Each structure stands twice: as C-alpha cells, then as structure tokens.
Image (cartoon, rainbow, N blue to C red; front, side):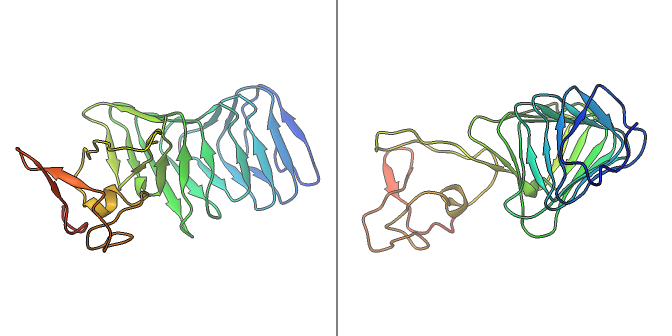
Length: 219
C-alpha cells in the first residue's frame, strides 16, 4: 500500500512493504514509524525523509534517489540485492549504517555531492560497491567485509587528531601521496604545502632518524 504522497505534509509509514514505486514530492515530509521495505524511493528536492530510528530496506533491483533532506536518526539503510544510490545536491546525505546484500550497489553523484557515514559500512562476502569515490567515512565509522568483498573507487576516511597540539604518527593503508594524506591539515616547510617557507611540520623516518619531507607530491 502507498503510492505517491503528493499533498501530504506528514506521512507515517507503518510496518509495510510498499508494492509500487514511491515518490516523495517537493514539500512533502515522510517519517518512518517502523522498519520499511521499498522497491524504489525517489526523494525529490524540497522533500524530507526521517528514518526516525527505523531501518529502510531497498528491495533487489531498486534505487534510492536522494535530492531532498535525509535524516538517518541512527537507523540503517539496507540494499537487499542489486541496486543504485543516487546522491542529490552537494554536500550530500549523512547515513548511519549502510548494508549491502551479496550483490552490487552502485553509488552515483552528478554535482560532486558525497555520501557521509558515521556508523558502519557492511560489504559482505560476494558483495560489491562501486562509486566508492563518492563516499566519506566519518571519524568513528568502520568498514566490514571479507576477502571476496569488492570496493571500487577511492573512499575517503576522516580521522580526528585529538588535542593537545603535538607530533602524531600517521600512515596510509593504501598507496597515496603526502599531499593526499595531509590534505585536511595545515602543512608548511615543503613544496606543495600551505606555507612552504616555514619550518617543516612533516617528517618521515629514514630507519635511523626523522627527515623533513621536501615535497608533498612524493608518494
């Protein structure tokens, strides 16, 4: 039950499986009152969707298009099979958990918007995630998977550096440059840094001593 919700300002969905394509038009506001499964969900610009702590499942072969305002409220978005997640205007939605089934989820972005996660990204055995270059994991987020999980695209991972000020050891689990690794930090004393003439703020260990990094474009 439930098709378009044109004209509705607040729609509370009960524990139902929506049998037809579901569109939330401009100006409408949807709040889930129980875990809900949809074959498709098209959240138009100007509309809002609040999961209100209830998981949203997109059925196999469906898509989730998020042009409007999205609030996870601690709930998970699950794709039960092959699917597509279309991101709307920048900066993009904040998910808590995103779970894939043993199939492929493609994430698309048309204007540089990103998918932010502050909980868990679960890519189980046999599953594949493409478009990971549109994903940013917040500092406390984690990724779970197996050796057969496939993730395509350069996913960003944010990590907090707690106070007080001082030296920190940093490393990357994948090939990168110093510029990419330190992109969100103030750097100086190297070519490509924020202030090249200043004293160096980044060093590498040579095996016997710490040596200033002269060029952040180095890998």
